[in-house]
Image (cartoon, rainbow, N blue to C red; front, side, top):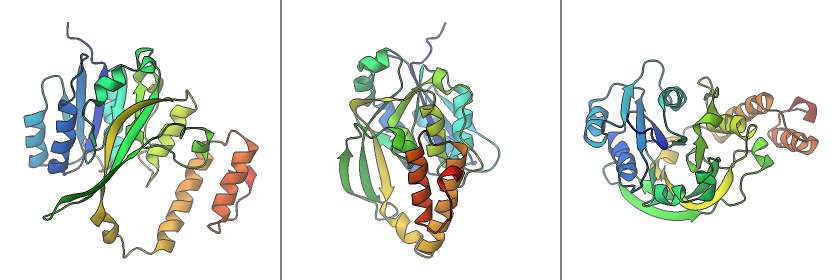
Length: 265
């Protein structure tokens, strides 16, 4: 009987084979004495993605091309339904892991006890395209960042968590949200059990320096307007645990000229 994986790594992807290769290469480079499965879920037909997965995945992994509208939420949900590992870790196709990450994570007592944890990351600024280059990289110590303030704002990227699979039973990413679906998902998990911090360097989160310039035609007012209603949507789905947080929510939305009162959020 095949050994069940200890870690399941869910990677949603969309026609970014070169970035996916970097992502998968960083996972395959991990030296760890437990079974690891990678689940790559593509939301589009793409020959380059097919080739990357054929080259880098093994029989222990899974590559699926799903139907439906593009977007990471449905891809992550499919990955969740197929994952067999004791722990679930999400990693976007344009991000990667630091060398030695999984071994360091596995050595943590909280992980040996089967508890949810979150870990540190680095933020990498790069330029993509014909003149691709790595511009800068800096570490982020996330110790102490996760608390009830998550009910006000998103605090930690979803790729910086390792979740026991049993803890996620019945949960799913909202496929109808325009943004903040990660935050919405993590609030649902947080309400079940709070993760503890482990001093491990995990994800390398890559930021494309050119992506900001591509959005210059969108006014800041329009961007803020959409963000306000996305925040309100999350607030209405997840009740604030204290009156003080309700007050902070209302104050934040009021600062964007949305006339709400604490009892509404």
